Length: 584
Image (cartoon, rainbow, N blue to C red):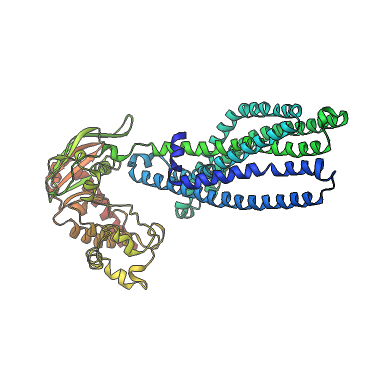
């Protein structure tokens, strides 16, 4: 994992080198104050050498001006380097998300993914910048300070060195618990983001059911888990830092007392200048040691985030199952050959499904919810990896086609239309980003939404809001159909495209869909059987199997599942119509 982290420095070698050089100079110049102060106390002041005292003071100011410039460089350019590395990781992560299969998003919440994309990468970028810098400054400052202390008095220097093994032993003892608590904290942050994303996305449903209190309770439960996780982190930190600070304080007192005894006894020529320089240098030595140990918190936080980042990057991509053949000339002949499929173990959705849809024909799939109709639709563009059976288009197994060329030839209209934030034009253009204005306008006309667009004050530039919230269901559906007219795919999948619409809107959209389906191989999942009476063939899908297949008239004559569904649906419609007459 360390090698993969280092990999992100490759585009920033110069800045890293300059940053480390600046950090080294900051560390070295840190020793200037105790050195000059000792010389003042031991030589310049006793010898009444005013010139050297002034020169020493001016020299220190000059050193601190240089350190100021160096610190600015480290703070600014170091952070810029970290931000660029964070941006590169975010790009890699976003690109990875584009390659992940449907199954990944079925099993992972959006908020958790967003937590990795934001919080985790921020922690990683902070480590990328502060990690090497802190290690350099703290290490060289500590080495310089202890070297100077040994020069002043090697006995006191050795005593001071005794603090290091104790502090690092303490760090080792607390590290495992701290790492566990930090990773639990990361999970809790991800859970908070997931809950927040879900609540905001579903706020209209929450208000419609007046369930604000339930959402508050759910959020508060997640929030309490986060608070507890962070409390555990701070408990580990508190114990560690309290004990480590006591040890350093104790050594400060020890050096103060022993130095006083050395001075009192005149051991080794120890004088007031040495004593003062030693007291100053003790802090210069202890502080970077504490800084190195405090680095543990940042390292553990970032390493936990980087582990989550790597786990996502290492997920299997769709391209692992990509074919080699380009899907160019398409007739649209579709064959399912003994296809079985399940999303999870022991949860079979399709069981030995076979059918043949000739090019340019329409097959309608009907049946109860959960029977496998939508799964059939999702397998054609290979949203899921098929393990049992084969699907052929134009007598070639779809697994032999590249994913991109396969999906370019397939258009899908679903019940739950997704529109992106932006303008009406942006969303129609999604079907063919290189389309001309004339092509966009023609697509909108065919989708029966051109008049509506022209009636808007801002026309094509009208902002539709998040997920198209400013449009009605029918308007959103017609925009999605216009998007498909622009894409112009030879194979069309309509997955209950009008089931959530009122009758009047449905009639308008059915007219658009009929226009869209001309000359294309069309697979329709339908809830309202009246909309598919004229399909070339109808298949009844239930419990993962095709139970019946034929034209509308043939299935009605069978007096089987389809005829029962049809009569029941129209019986209910007649009763509803009669009830409306009685009410009026």
